[in-house]
Image 1 (tube, rainbow, N blue to C red):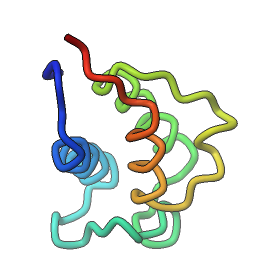
Image 2: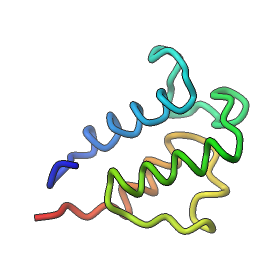
Image 3: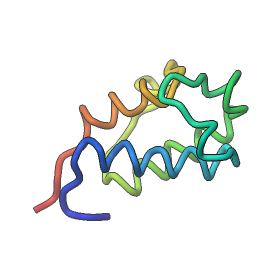
Image 4: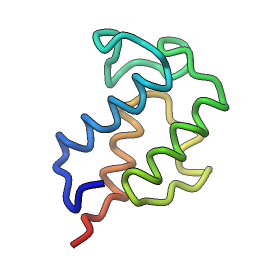
Length: 87
């Protein structure tokens, strides 16, 4: 992962992760999409997505912070709060 990512880069990286896990066309992705209803992600997909985010963004996301999230926008907001650029 790059040493410093802008908010736009964080969003782009998260978008790529979700598109890959959900196996959807890029134009089907939206920050307001519901993980379950719109993107078809089940609980295992969510765990995989969180693990990839933790690895790629070098952050820790405890279960109690992400299990209630409904959309990519919610997750992006959480990542932006946790992400600390590495020098």
